[in-house]
Length: 101
Image (cartoon, rainbow, N blue to C red; front, side, top):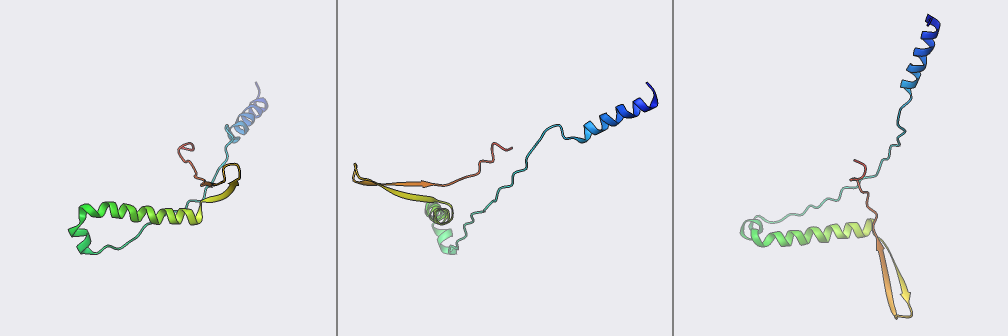
């Protein structure tokens, strides 16, 4: 094999290395952070520590559900005349990051 043939061969190998072996797509998702902040008095925290935990949980649930409902929940109603009732549909879309890792 002469020098010209070797140069062509190595040029082909080099160009093959420049091409990515796997095609990939980059996906970027918007991430919103839900944050809870509330002030509690020193007396309440120090004297009622055991009873305070359920109350804090309720406060967090209430605030987060309000934020979620206002910003992310889509809902609609539909009347079902055969049952003489209204049906409520609600949905929220969530990005599942466990599949992409």
